Image 1: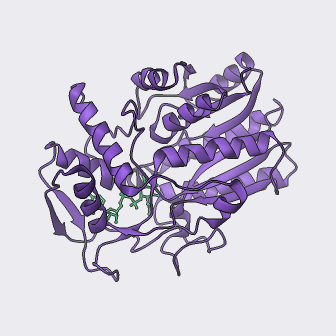
Image 2: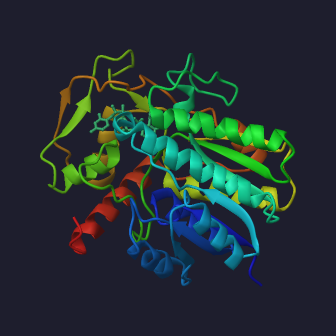
Length: 345
Ligand code: UD1
């Protein structure tokens, strides 16, 4: 028998699509709402090829209250929501702050407003380690102070967390789990789905794999004069499938009334800090493919070092990151090669 129905907003996006796969593999029925602003319909084919099941799909914008209301009318059995729908480019958010505040805040407000009287039990919210800014110490626990956001994108994550707390504190009849991701990377091992950035990638791994395959001439390493062992920045690179699995655990926890508080917040990371230079070396070791790169100046706004203390998620959710960095790098490379085979890139 099929399990409950889960609404996945932004379900054709990078983390959303991997989560839909894990939800369907766990027996959940899924309906996706996505405006395809940063993804495409073909992702549904990839999900179907992996799971043998095509999720229901509604092409609409979550900031459109009428569209979201119609969706709840058509699917009165939605038991839980995972909210990925959001704009996520740090640089773009500085140029177009209102777009970010409108998209990210209105989406969440619409969902919270509707779910209250539709019997939805819980909402998982995609947050980010960006809320910690430059942390005072590493690894970072969930109790670390929230720092002033350095971009409108980061600010939307902080405000959305506050909106969730305020709404639930006011007596809303549902629960929430906030997941703070570190740096999600890699692709599904089948290479049927992965990250597909629009235009020139801003993030490290898509730029790296596009350089390795020859689309970009050279990867720029932004700074090697940081206070780190090799001078390059340190991040916690978390495999996207591992990350997706945490969402299934979180939604199950709320549906089965296992939450210990009405709002719970978890870091999702490996607990291992890896420098940009170490990551390039890991990619070359795992794939045997060289990545032409050069050191350039620092990128404004970058955090020097941040990695997770994931033991709260490990102990309470029973979740842990399992993929090795080599496996993750091979999956990212297989996905890039698949895009080339399909003539997409
Ligand atoms: C940023 C956001 C994070 C968001 C993530 C994914 C902040 C502080 N961080 O993470 O919230 O979830 O994007 O959208 O807002 N690098 C290079 N060369 C490149 C690209 C990146 O050296 O061409 C370096 C960067 O300087 C950084 C590291 O690689 O040290 C990771 O960069 P990136 O992948 O862009 O992610 P973050 O900036 O860590």
